[in-house]
Image 1: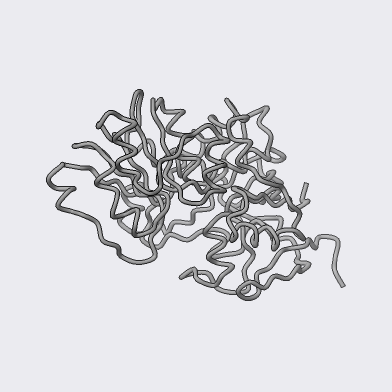
Image 2 (image 1 turned 120 degrees about the vertical axis):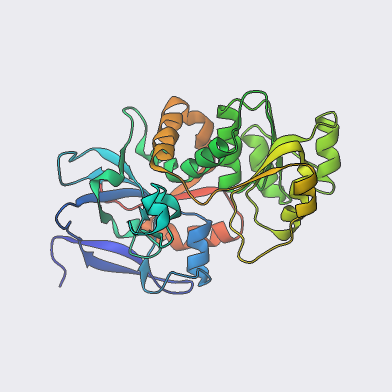
Length: 337
């Protein structure tokens, strides 16, 4: 018999098999705070977990690492916050250098331990990022994936008048394009083969490249200059082969999509043209704050990326739609507040 503190949690019990279970609310240990999670964003990493192909996730698991909620304990009680889901070991070389986001033993809420679709998480208070006054918490649920884009555009030094190419018009690709626009890029072009995603890119205000010959199309549109910066948000071998041909000499390539295995890359072109390749794993705390500020400043630019807000009951169907490429970003309302 369930008690008054029990809360429904969406549990992935096996690949592609969910169950809704009543679970007692987790309570914070010393030095932790409890956050009641209101909305959870679903992403491609979650889809890999659902399919059973993620290398670390094990079942049963409560998904959800793109979190916005309300603090329920401690001095910031009742404040709406975004939760940094990264769990660093604090012992490796990266952590010693202050780069916990590339910790050798990095773990995440919602992947390595139960996440936001249980309605509550407990975390260290320094991993909370206050939602700016006036920003709809639903929009704040985009802060975690937008932080990935903010991090990548910052590391690639995207600036005013740059010509930028983004390969892939999934959620991260579209957020990269929006972040590049915010950074002042003059030209932003997206490479994407799927008609539905090309249509979404156009609806958000971006032109797409001829998918049959993106390099020639890019050269035509830039009077032969090509891109100052090219981002790979697709993580498919065909895109890796194109990357050195998309950028001008001394240009920059930002790797954002995660490859599941090694791929071929023309290192001779990288060498002869003195290209810079920048890897981007996740984000740093300042990137989350910057993402929240961007969302607060212009939420209407990002609203088209939210395809639908569903209940916990509707989350499995949302995963099916995500797998089919139907839509961009689905959010799950937990009903916690």
